[in-house]
Image 1 (spheres, rainbow, N blue to C red):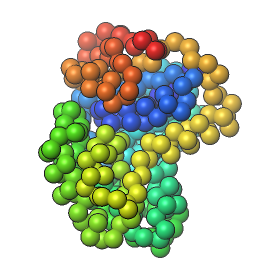
Image 2 (image 1 turned 135 degrees about the vertical axis):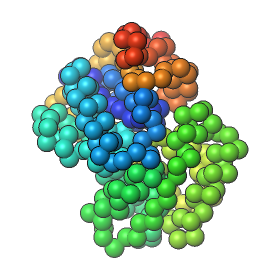
Image 3 (image 1 turned 90 degrees about the vertical axis):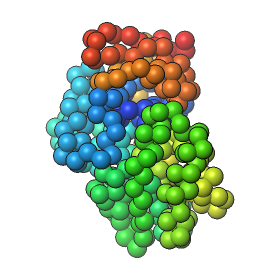
Image 4 (image 1 turned 90 degrees about the horizontal axis):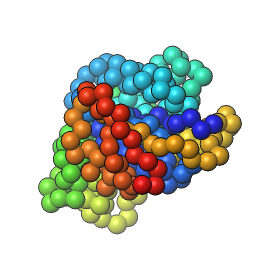
Amino acid sequence: MRSPIGIFDSGLGGLSVAREVIRKLPQERIIYFADTAHVPYGERPLEEIKGFALDITRFLIERGAKAVVMACNMSSAVALDEARTRWPDVPILGVVEPGAKVAVRTCDGRPIGVLATTGTVKSEAYARAVGRFDDNIVVVQQACPKFVPLVEAGLADSEEAEAVSRDYVAPLIQAGCGTIILGCTHYPFLRRAIESATGPGISIVDPAEETVLELAKVLNEKGIASDAFEGSHLFYASGETSGFAELGSRFLGEPIERVISLQASVVCVRTHGS
């Protein structure tokens, strides 16, 4: 029960999911993996992303994760089904279906907009997921290749982020979208800029929030929810780690003292509550 929950993304974006776990499930311990050796995923071939996602899932399970969250829309789109087949005894969740579900519930039949990476747009993952809930709803997708680099560079609150957000949001507004899904876990960190671009009257859906509610349900159903926090959260990075702890702490809302660098094979942890 007190084994950790594995969460991964290409970089800092999945911390939006980790943040929700810490807020909503404070008794749970986290192992977070940032694939900084390959960030950004957005323009990479889908089969390559699938390989990364399966390797990281294996890594987390081998380190004792009792459940894994693919806190990456592209990984969820291309690797979730195969991961569940390979590791049937471990609950593995994605972020696409939870986001689509809440968007359908709130859109009142109007078109749903999706801001996502180029790869996620190409995968049509959100269009298919929305269609499973209501195939009458129109889905309008917008690729946002500049968003992830802005977040990873710590520029989420910059004037550049606001200008880029206006450019990306405009086609969705013109299409009559009343609900917009943040189709990449990096994008919640741009929420202020995106909401400034949309103006009032448009609902913003953060799949991280719905994903963690689904995670809590699964943990309880399987009887593996932790009854108390024990140990510490772990943060891994496959490549560059400079600046990760500082910027990641801002995004997470809690201090990340150190990161486990797989390159250097140096194990460093953040003590819970430090």
